[in-house]
Length: 498
Image (cartoon, rainbow, N blue to C red; front, side):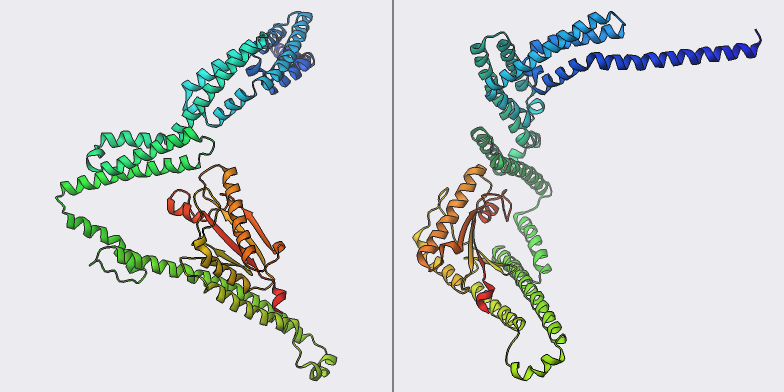
């Protein structure tokens, strides 16, 4: 055969083989789809019911039959055998789903504890505890499949306890691992020798966090803050130890240390144009700095209020200008008769001026340590920093009678106004208890006002926000104290001033 004809023959043969192979592949895929569709659907339903966890024995049998059918199809074995295995697998998947649904009801508490452990990342942070829990839970599931319900419940209860322990260990490690690592570092650096008090503070805080997690693992706000505080104190101790050792090596004196401590306050003072004097210690320059900062904050608040008023006045003046420009000739002729009458816009301008006076009077009625007065549009907010409640309670001490008198006088400055009392807590404690406490405290203030001033009960509302609206960090006692507050919001009735 000539060479060219031979090449053409080889090419055609290869093309034919490729086409047949491709056809057989497509045919095989279509055949598998048709054969396995029912079993695939049953397997998906079983997986959705978590049958691999809750009915492991029956589910494993179903998977084994399914995989056997796959292998037989790949080896092109008898289709009847493949169909039979798939029918058996489908039945097993359905039984596994039903068994899983039963286990879901019987093991409800254990399943919840397992989910909580997963949420706490127990497989990552408490792997040995997690493994024991999983083994016990799987044992309970297998026992239930065997029909031993009472024994299964007992094993599930044991698994639940193990999952809870795994969850707690994971939470502790997750929150406190950094602190534990810093303690090891501190031990190597001999921090105990140079900064024992600070290091002991860190260890004490870690114990508080461990106790809080053990007693209230589902409200981890306080434990998280304690963990951060422990980390800070441990780092602080390491830094202090380094500094003290350095001073010792450099033969520095107590005088050197005290002079160095004055430098940061001096830099801050100079930045805000305060002349620091350290002849009586650091407290006076510290107080001077705080006073300047507070004045800046007050000025910013006043400027924001003035800006809002100015924008309101500009808008009204623009409307008034437009009104005057649009008067037609006929109205101009009648001006003599209505000259003394003022437009609604002019009255609104006067109203704005009067409201500004009322705001100023209300702001001046409180000392700085009694209330912070804020503006939010036309609303006036009294943040009652001088009012406090007993821990966990909503009773108002009689000693606040004069304090509430000032609140009542401020409210009277705004006739027919609507009043909203809002209660707020810090983040410590459960969300539900904080929400209830904030509502109770807001209601207590509302009732006190209703008993002592003439106001329609429909015009005053009490709302508790719990811990949802913090104004400061919850990681320090000072910040938490700011978050625990009552605010009285006055919504002026602008029409009452017209």
